[in-house]
Amino acid sequence: MSALHWTIEARALSLIEETPALTEAQKTTGVRIPRLLHHDQDNNILIIEDLGTGLLLLDEWLATPAVADTASRRRQTPPSDSEAVVRNVGERLGKLLASLHGMKLSDEPEALQEFVNPTVSGFIAEEVVGKMSGYLEKYTNLEANRKDRICSLIQTDFEEGNSGFSGGGNGDARERPGVFSVGDLWTGSILVSENAERIGLIDFEFAGKARPLQDMAQLGAHLHLQAIAMASRNLKESSSSSLTVTTFVKALYAAYHSHSRELEVFWLQDGDGDDNDSVNNEDHRRAVRSAWILHGREMIYNAIGRDWGFYSSHCGSGDAIDVQEIGKAEIQKKMMEKGVWYVEMAHKIGSEEAEGEDFLKPLYHQ
Image (cartoon, rainbow, N blue to C red; front, top):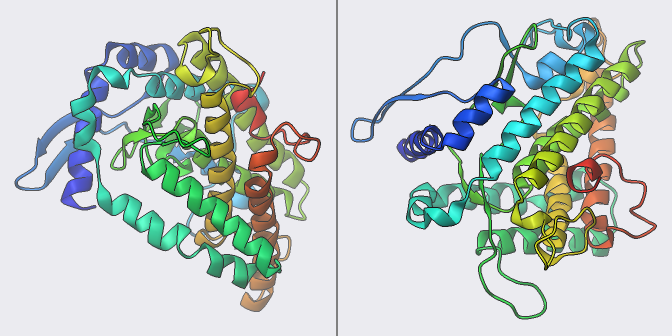
């Protein structure tokens, strides 16, 4: 981690600790964010609280033993009565994240400048957005015109988010309101104890102002990929394993949406200040549309950026590497096709074509 990343993490943890609403949210949900213990910017030293032992990464905790028992992952199954436990963890995390994103950024505009890290947007522009055409060319059979359209949608969404959430086709270039974001929220940012009593939220080195739902769409992409991978396994527990992930996501998103409404966040308000369940006010439409595109983009990128081969129905303990690669390619193709679908449907939300989507929907519509 670079010195700037450490500095941003220290500033984020300090801001969180100084926000009474977030201190209270951690107490009521049982989701802990590490406290900043010491930061020496000149000597590049950062010391933060240790959240303790016996904590698993979220995707490991959600996985069944047959999946988690590999050389690089610990064996762990959610406790008995797993569905209720999984829902409980999702609900608690959803409430905490809603509280984090509900911070009033306009109260401290100067402080937000301290979170700007140009290397982050540069990396995304070059490695993710800039190489999207190559990823699609190599791993899908899309026609050239369709591939170019997808890349254009991803590029435009990235540029709008990178330029202060400025306006669309009506020429409105005013800065759009944003939320305080973890910035790179994924399953590796969330820790869960074996008994599900303790939950941790870590890694704030990319924190700062972002578009509404950015964190949730990005985390959801990793969980969506995990659900697809689990469902692809030709094992008895595969369908129930995938269901465990979707149960968690629905609880997470529903709690996030509900608590965000309680906090009266701007993107859930209509023109009269009333909260709104449908995608029909401008901030709401922008947030949801961008969430779909980001969700799809991250699914495409992480389908090849992470190793999903151990989930394949073709992969057993004695299988040869070439057979494993065939299974891995099948999973990647399925993942990328779903990611492409989200990008293409982002401007058709509410239409008959997009009506069947139920993964992201609890996040913004109830």
